[in-house]
Image 1 (cartoon, one colour):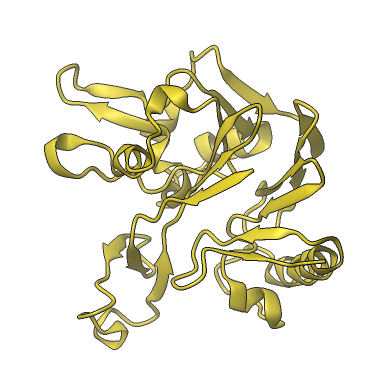
Image 2: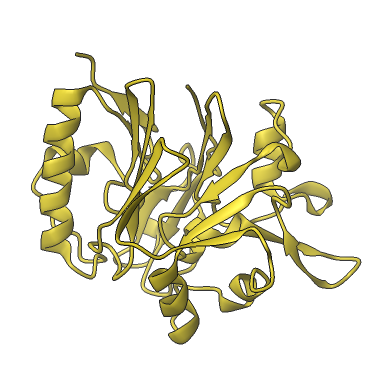
Length: 250
């Protein structure tokens, strides 16, 4: 199994839910608005024997010539949008779901960013995102997936995709957040989205104010970390500035 972090850079976020680029060599966190958090935005590409899997999709920002930053990051590793076979979402907050689609300047509409991939989304999370109007979700982007025949809703709280990808509703960060386990030949990769976003949070009893159930998220992190240590998991950290992944050896 090959794991490729796809960093989109560092950002600060405050109560406005806007992500402002942060230059780690020149910017100062204390100069940002009160309560700003410093985070990395970092989807992951997982290459297995069966699939090329994208775990979450970043902010959906574009770079030169209107190219999706996520596409540019993939191209650096010789991977192109049509190569991706599965896009699996932990949840649909805009910093995780922004790159599922891209804006076509010619047609003046959103298009799928990965047209050959199956998109796996928790059905309860989908319904929640479209029913509620809060800045954390971009409903306009989500709505372009409505008629996509490869949109696959995960309707169970716990299940398996193609025999080796496992998902579990965790509901700590947001009501219908889910975590993903990829188990190939006994090698287990764990992606905890916003419930296991940084290495330091795994090692401390930290209750995050931005979680809808901070105590639950804290207890889940403890449980996953202890199990991962026993079983030699590789942890993927979507928001860690310094450490994209950590592998236990057994």
